[in-house]
Image (cartoon, rainbow, N blue to C red; front, top):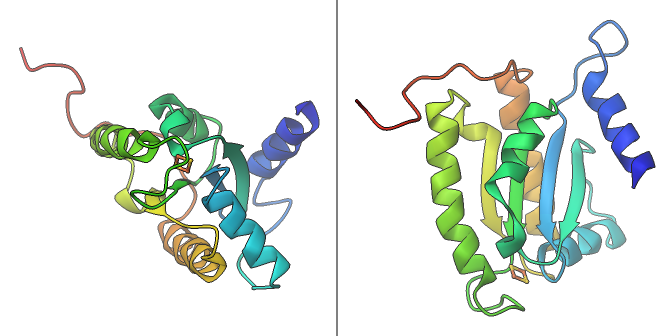
Length: 162
Ligand code: FES
C-alpha cells in the first residue's frame, strides 16, 4: 500500500519541466461491478487513456465525501466515482446511499469553485468494459481542456448565511 501511495504522489507531483503535463484522475471504483468493468476493459485490450489511478472500494456506498476532497487535496486533477447500476448493488442499497451523498459532494465542489467536469459519478457494470473506457476517455479529454487543478477558489459561503 505504501508503494502505491508513493507512486501516486510521484505522479501528481511531476512538474511541467520534468514532462509534458498529463491529467491524473483518481478513480474510486466499487469492487463488484465497476472494478470488474475496468478489468474487463483491460482483459479485452480496450484502449483508453492511462490517466486514471484506481482505488477499489467494497461498494460505492463506502465512498466518504472526504475521499473526493482528499483526492483534490492530494493534487489529482479530477475524481471519478463508479458503482453498480441501481438494483445491482451487492449490499442492496449502497449505491442509493452513494447517490445521495454525491449530490451533496457536487454542491460542495461547486461552492469551492471546482469545475463540474473535474468530478464524475456514474454506474458501470461488470460487463461494461467499453463504457468504462469511454468514461475515462471522456473525462481525460474534459480535464485536459480545463488544465491542471489549481486548488480551490470558493465561489460561495459554505456555511449557513448569517
Ligand atoms: S456493490 Fe457496487 S455499488 Fe454497492
